[in-house]
Image (cartoon, rainbow, N blue to C red; front, side, top):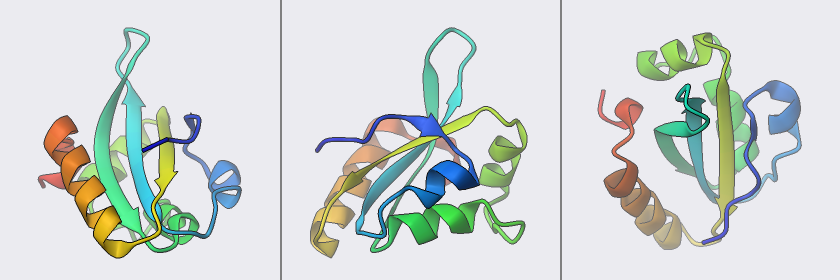
Length: 103
């Protein structure tokens, strides 16, 4: 699986994300030059799903809190099939154990 370059998580960058299926990681700077994955998701339309998280109506309070810090980043990988997205998402969640996936 090949991920896009990491970008600041904002409306402008999300508007440049493909409207195709895939998985994505939401990250925060950890203060020591690296980042921590706080959420992993998947969608048949990456751009729409990433835009959804930026809305005031976002239901996941953990994501809301992380976005409020203003230092969030994201990347994505294209995966056509739903089965492939399910497997990739599960593996990423098991590997990163992102806090906002376990609310």
